[in-house]
Length: 431
Image (cartoon, rainbow, N blue to C red):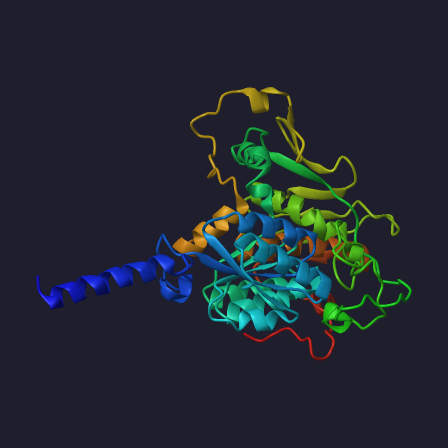
């Protein structure tokens, strides 16, 4: 045996030992970048989570326990929340590698981050989604996807232009034992006969913010929390003190959200869109209630004459047709007559793909570059229905809507209602 052979073997053993000692985490950017097609099966998808309130803490727990993922960064304008999130990540991985940022753009600037999970207040969504798309990141954004009709179209266009994979967090399409999927299959298979009306039971619109001033929470970048919204003094209802364990009520105020209409409405109107096979369309008329003080009663008329009615309890969706009716919520699925649901499926009945994990669907689509179930147009169209319903209460006059041109045809005044004037320094990004 020659000395050269011994040296060669030693080198091999050293290389093998070094490989074993190296961390098992390999960023996907070093293997099959999303900019260059599909990923390999062994690489991990690297994430940054933006907005560390209660919803993103749920996502944080789920992604920490997913072997396909590595969380590299968290971001929040509140130091307490972001430091808490960093500590949870570091404790899980047994390291101090998770970065904590105040400004989402710092996380987006990192080339080793593949994708972001956005769960900030609604008025921030569009800015952060567009920034993420421009930075080449794939995106999971909580519903409602955006705060205005103009933002809905802009987000959709930006995601498409930059070739990103976006999943909107409207998980009723994938979870809750598949009952919403089953309801959509029943409606679209014609088991109710000709569909006539749909009753959507959700809460009401948001109102202008009138909260008084409170002493500001230490460690909070209040100017950045407000972002594009008008400046106003701090109040803990908008940004709770400490690590909150509830869903804050900023969603009740018009400057930051569309109220329960866009909160729960983004779930239930999304199912209506799905059932009407309108994921690339929407209503064509919006009719306010006759009572000018009413908080329910707006009607959305779809092509073909189906009337979607915004009502109060029971919270859920009632589809009514010439052969019967169907009620669906997160708790139950019932039909009148019962045979609509109980009769065996016919060969002609629609079968939708059984996707049962919203996050998993997004991660799989990041790898394959296919569209997830709640992709950018689904999210944009569904939230636009909610915004249109809100306009029925805020403006109290009938409106015609062209869902393909994204405008109120021949109505210059109404077209100004598709967006709002953002605060200087927080304009909607160009793309």
